[in-house]
Each structure stands twice: as C-alpha cells, then as structure tokens.
Image (cartoon, rainbow, N blue to C red):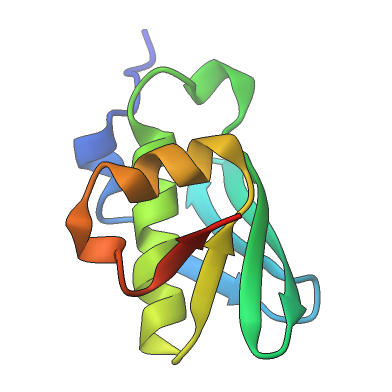
Length: 103
C-alpha cells in the first residue's frame, strides 16, 4: 500500500521558480503542485494555486504557498495575494504582513 504524503514530508521538497512560465512549483512524488502569478511593476500577483487532486487535504497547499512566499522574498519581490487560498494562508501568519498584500 502506498503511503500518503503529509505536509511534514513535503516540507523538505524544493520550490522551483520558473520565471519564463511565471510559476512556482514543487514536485511531490511524480506530481506537481503549483502557484501561478503575473508580474506588474516588479510585484507578483499570485493568481492561482493548485495541488493535484489525490494529494489534497494533507497540508501540502499550505507548505507550497509558504515556500512560494519564502522564495519570492529571497529574490527581492513583494506580492499581492489574488487567489483566495493564498490570501487565507498569508492572513494566518503576521510573518507575511510586510511581503504579501491583499487584492
């Protein structure tokens, strides 16, 4: 029987920033969770997040979004959360108040 992923197991996964396709992604087994964005005036508008259906409900989305926040911060960006799920994750922690705005 195949073991389920958990947010704890996923927390070690690397987040990849694909600037050409305006996407942050994270591999989980052979599947990809992603955050899509648009870029305006050096600010990222985080418009869409997706975790593969069979991996949902395990905390992977939260890990994905927080790793996205960390990566864009490392790269010197600020962002606007457009996607409702991304907004919800950002609002749960004051850590992101100076980096993530709400649209």
